[in-house]
Image (cartoon, rainbow, N blue to C red):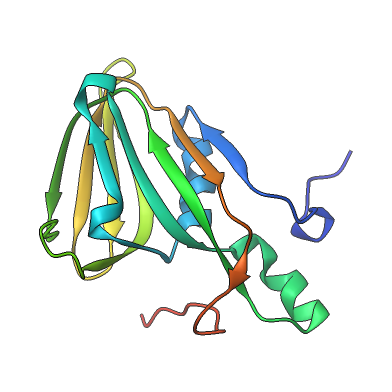
Length: 158
């Protein structure tokens, strides 16, 4: 048996879950460079759920796009975190309806037992901290892919 490769993937919507830090690394890689308006964040304290509607860059499709000579794509995706006990942020003005945020990574910081903190690191020194009872994250594509407005693969200056 061999490991899965991007080249072997079918072009179908993602529907992934993470219950451990290692699983979250995959989701983090797939949501890197996702953009979303600050107004697209929702926390439902009574349901212990936090959600983001992201415009996710389709990293898993870059090689296929190059091979077929077509533009790179984005897709709208839901990133949902369950078991959320508290939410705080730094560098995010949720009252600004025009504020667009860019997600760089989702990092797990385990505590004792199953609880811990999920840090959503944003471009420009912003961050969202979710205190959770146990790690449970899902990423689900909810629209058809569309051509990335920039038509370019995101890049990062080091």
